[in-house]
Length: 231
Image 1: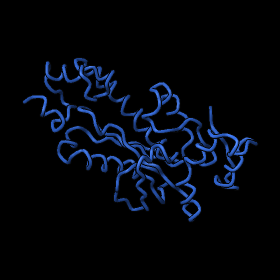
Image 2 (image 1 turned 180 degrees about the vertical axis):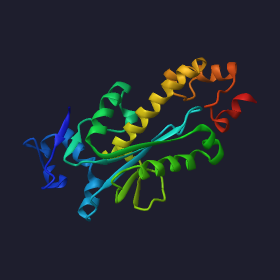
Image 3 (image 1 turned 90 degrees about the vertical axis):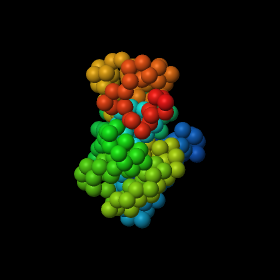
Image 4 (image 1 turned 45 degrees about the horizontal axis):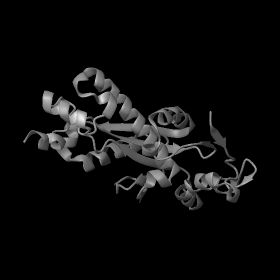
């Protein structure tokens, strides 16, 4: 398991000044690693004890749900390689998924289905998934770092543009959301084999659009996303 163990007593901000005996300034990889905790450390310095990261996967596809992940890190147990899930290969995401889950104080995911997306729109569906994921955390966080979305929660919320590349907690949440959504789309690929969901995961690839026009939509297609293909 590629996990860093840092002293809870010292606190991450202090422990991170020197990792495995190597000064941060001597290793840019370590510098990036520490920078991924800037927002978490800022909140910890204010006395916040439990910070969660929140991110989504699946806002853009023509089919399938949107999924949100929420993640409270144990700052004594940090997984190497965690980054924005879009920058990771599927193999790397799958590898990190279990490590991230095992390292968390708490983690959760929540889905909002295609029919609800059509009813309330994708932004509101994304917010709903995020709220449900955060509500499922136990213990509850005192603050939430969220990738670019302004969200009403009963805790302090900090929306961060490109947060999945700037915050470890958000990046970990993005991995959980992406992997769980991709795995669900593999199940849908078996149920609806005509569309090739196993390859594009519901996104608008040329093959997906071709099959959509050939066979028409299935129950997990988003009607509001595909209407222009049938004019």
